[in-house]
Length: 260
Image (cartoon, rainbow, N blue to C red; front, side, top):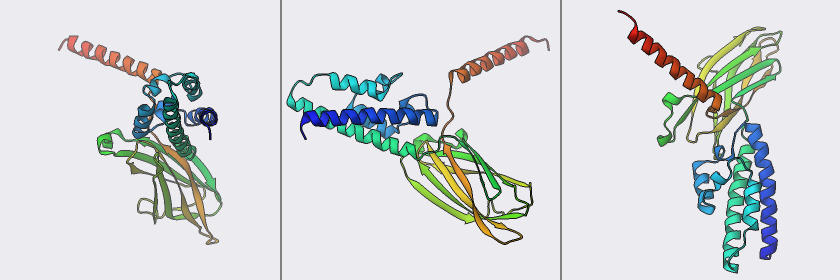
């Protein structure tokens, strides 16, 4: 393939990847591209194109690609080096997009199977999280509700945990938190558990094996995928924190100024 043809092909690849990335950013509610890449991917892309994430602020991958492809090359060797760098960057970008595609978009999920409703909500546990040790702890709250006419027993569980690097772990066990609850119509069973990741983001999904108490029929109730992701810190959060700090200062001043 000629250099011109390769340049055209990689440029089109970046345009397609840019559209997919925008879709994934919207799906996962991430505010900018830099939020979705791992530390290693940051380093790889910055080595290929210095300041790339600064240039992406408020802009798309397509915008940066157009600038790069419009810039002239000093020589054939320079052009070859740039095309090689483009291929490396496109490979990293496509890999990240593929991993994002299978990640759950929300830390909450809700699914009903054969009348068994399973709701989950996950959140990061900062007090037990240690990034320098590659330890990210997520707690998840589960509520299992029986909407059937007959009682249902939850006898076992199966979880699948995937981190943002695509590493997957399968976990199976009897019951839930040491119990095999039997739920009559309308009854709920709630519990909280936790999982540990080596990366800051991931997702979980799974099934509960249930047994209908009258028919003895065995079936699997879906635990719909949910995201393991740190909370987003918005400008509104910052303003609220600032107001809280101001309230604390006023309260402290009032206490110190009050007569004993």
